[in-house]
Amino acid sequence: MSNKVIDLLQAAFDQPNLQEKLHGADTAEQFVKIARENGYELSQEELGAALGKVHLVFGQVVESMMGELMAQGSNGNGKVPTTEAISGTNTDLVKRLFSRGEAFDSEGFVTFFTDTPVYQFGNFDVCVDKESIKKSADAFFSQIDAVYHEIKMIWEEGDAVFVEMDVTYWRKDGSVVSLPCFDIFRVEGDKFSELRIFMDVNPVFDPSIPVPPSASVLTLSQGKQMIPPGTMRRHFAEHPEGKQRVAQGFVPKWSTAGPKWAIDSNVPMPSEQLQAIGELSAAIMAEDWEKVKTYLTDDLLYKVGSGEAMYGPNAVVDFFKHTFKNTAKFYGHDARKIWIEPDIITIEMDAKYEMVGSKKHVKVACCDIYRMRGNKVSEWRVYADMTPWGEAAGKIVALDKNKSSQVFPIIVVFQVETWKQQELLNNIVEYLESYVKHQPGFISSTLHRSLDGTRVVNYAQWESAEFFKNAMSGKIPLQEFSPDGHMYEIYHQAIT
Image (cartoon, rainbow, N blue to C red; front, side, top):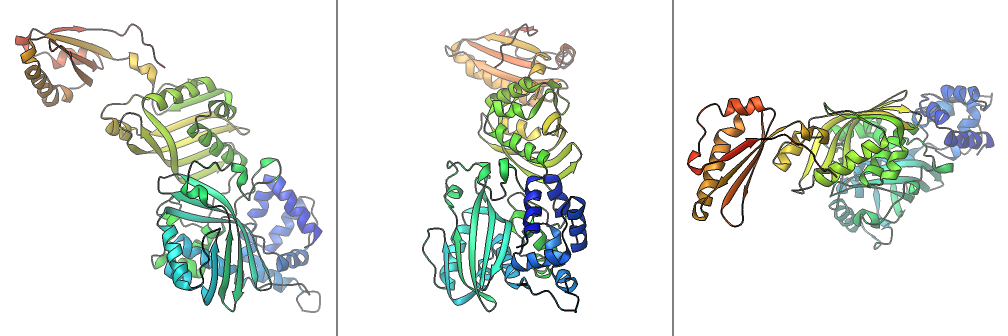
């Protein structure tokens, strides 16, 4: 391959801004123009020769300009240059096969193999016929929710096709893992005679096995990440067969399960700032609080809905600690749409939580807006309806722990003979459920009974004294049990 092309691609890997510009090129002419503007003199002929040898999936330009390059890259006498040009047929065959896997279409998957195939996934048993390949694929599909192939490079040498990529798996428990993978295909005619998949797939089945972010094949020097090409997402949106299969119901599982990505050729381009947001989210899930602070500016403003604003990394970390311990623990999200603007990241998502008490899993529809200063968050606003928390916990949930003092407690103590305690409890429960809980300003009521059977205590919370007085303006029942009730104000709370 031309040293000029190698130098350009290395520079693009090290410079995300250049990479993003090249990634957005739609034609060979645009690609070369961007390269020259950034100090890399490159002709379309040189680019055509390089792509004739290696099909580098580097944005839209490679998909759209192969034919154009072969037509334009003449040597002056109307002939194409004497390079090892490829048609891309075998490369296209690989992507078509991957589309079957992403749709969990095992029957379609095996049609791409000859009648005497060799198929091996990692260290699993070798399959030597289509039926065993189908069984192997079905068994694997049954253990995951979705799979996506993020191709970094794909190239052909004779009858072989080589693919370097990350494969992302969505496990049945809702977690996600992305693993590096290298595939070797051998082609006979228009079928695969052999497929060898080289990867360690064990983390898919055992989430306790650590997979560092740097394991990605997209990792570059100094731990930076190249922009994912989104090749397979564009395949379903742009390829004639891909679009036809979607119309026939063979949709990729990542569009119906997994992250529920839209089948759209307009694949958002990640940025360093978006990557920082992803790393911040991962650090929060891992409860690595010191790392969380590194992604927040010292003057951070953090605000959830109509709650009180919090300022600074320490306040935000304390909030997460308190929430994770007492209410719900964040363990992931399904992003619906991501908007990237200069210094602003907006993410529409379903945030996933496990309730502390009930251990129920709930999803909360929300939209997070991050205003960035460099690669740190300076302002973070969360807009969400937290009703699912309250429904799962069976109570109203306050996101702002400081608001816990803005309620009016009512404590009522009943003294009762032991044989009448249960009767009293039944009467109070009926009164609370049929009348009190429906009154304006009512927040909650917690009923206690003493273990010796001689007392019943009701601790209630109201939004104000006025609401309580209005609700109790009529005759108060249960007078025969001589209730001793008083209004209180909270003097002090010790909160973790």
